[in-house]
Amino acid sequence: MSLHAAWLAVGFSSLAAWLYLVFFHGGFWRTPKAPVPTPPTVWPEIVIVIPARDEADVIGGTVASLLNQDYPVFPTIVLVDDGSRDGTANAARVAANHTPGQLDIVAGAPKPPRWSGKVWAMRQGAARAAVLRPNARYILFTDADIEHHPSNLRDLAARAEASHLDLVSLMVRLDTGHLWERLLIPPFVFFFRKLYPFPWVNDPAKSTAAAAGGCMLVRRSALDSSGGIDAISDALIDDCALADRLKHAQPDKGRLWLGLSERTRSVRSYDGLGGVWDMVARGAFTQLRYSPILLAGTVFGMAVLYLAPPVGLIAAPLHGSIPVATASAAAWALMTVAAAPTYKIYRQGWRHALWLPVAAAFFTAMTVDSAWRHWRGHGGGWKGRTYSL
Image 1: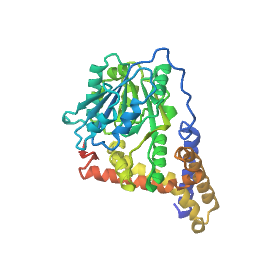
Image 2: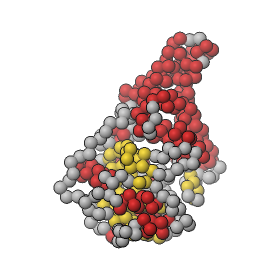
Image 3: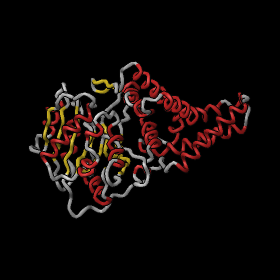
Image 4: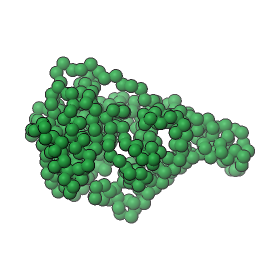
């Protein structure tokens, strides 16, 4: 193949891929406002489970936001203190001081072999919830760094009850307080939505299943019939593993709903490039099922999708091909149009989406680093734990 033919192949392959993604990939890039359904006649009981490990700096805001919900049936909060050494439990007690009896703190037991730390904490929280509120219809699993909008619990329950959903999950608004976070967090959300198109997740006829672990309202009967938390004991990407169980491992196929939130938010700061890098690298190779073939395909695909369009356009004086430059420009334009709604959520204009190829290069490097960590025996690490499953 000649060099000119190679330029043509890459340029038009990239354009074809973006035409498919924009028009035939479930409309993953759109961000329509989903109206909250009519409230139920009787509001169901909910127990909230928070796995927490060394979260003293953020847990107070999370607990306070949950105690400030406008939900008609006041929920019980179960905090599983998973071996914290920074006073996480005490910080939660201080936040709940004015509403005694609503916060129950479980001292986490040592993690058994082959369990991931967060899933083990979820398991203990779910067991405690069954004791405290045996008739509760739902469990809300939420992370320790999530500040919930006062209407969040009401909105989640109304949606679950209206459509008899087994899982209602929100991808909350992530923190973008640093320059690197402003560059990388919107693309992170965009890539997740491309990998798991929300309309497909929400369609019972589709096999796609996903959730966002920071905010998951789970129907307890569905959790039990799908094998419970024990069924995902070794999962490092616990949210998507749980969603897959709920959708596919029940006698009747489960119903999921996954959406975006601009009002419920994470207050965790990633402290620049290093924090975002570690967040992605600890689980990216797990997502690829530890496969070198899938890793190579991912690197190649990211290059064709995100690197080829700007290179093909900027290098026009070198290859001298108007068709290549035109195809590259069109692919870059489609990429920008698709990414712009996600950037808008983070108060960034469409021009910021032009930098998506730069962010994609960083995420590709993070994925390769995730594989390198696994091959060196470091596995996925978080909060002082390292896994090599």
